[in-house]
Length: 295
Image (cartoon, rainbow, N blue to C red; front, side, top):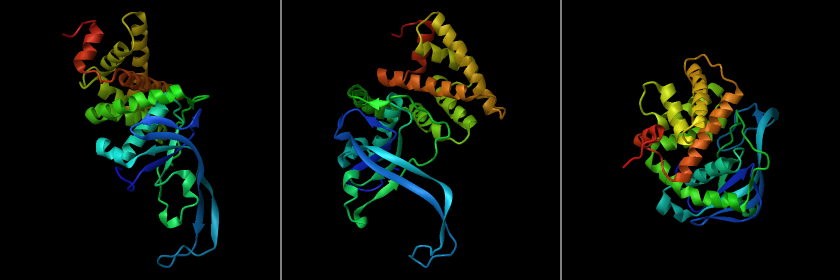
């Protein structure tokens, strides 16, 4: 989804509290407070409509539906596509970083063609709204007090261009971003676990031999300095990997903590890559594992 509509893009965010407003994220991107309530109750009609007309009554309400309080607006200027190709892609990338660095409970349920503060007074014919992340989160993550402060906004501002560069140049990094970003919405916990570990495997082991030891050893070497902490980390990662293997063979035996630990492991890996500005190569990882220095 590269283009929803022309002009500037306004992304409505839910589950996000701003300590200040607006925040300038660079390249004309702004994060600011707003309010709107997006809702969709489930209804049933019992007669076919005429062409171009709504279903005739009576209508009956069904249980369920969804609703979101839009508490923040992410403004993406139209001309950003001259440099970064996709307004929607940049919006999703910024939201990913907000989830990574602020609160994983943030969602992006709607895009608009104008600021939410102006929509109410616009004629219906001029309003364009596109629902986006409206699926129920099957494994909801969140933190207490997750708030966009000046420091958090600066963290996002300093990293979204790096994130764009890495997702554009490294397919394995892009896969990992998608796995972490969309894992909460996967209906099956076993499939969510598999997607997280598929991303870790892509980053740390292009080889298919001895995956369990290789992946756990390289991840531990990447995250920890040599010593007992690295050894303990390798063992804990290897235990998590056995849960992935069981799920892959149709015999899942993981619990919610195993899934949460896998989310957090991939989150830690991606955060370190964003901080360093690079995805380590096979040679980098092996050198780190064996304490060698590359020339």
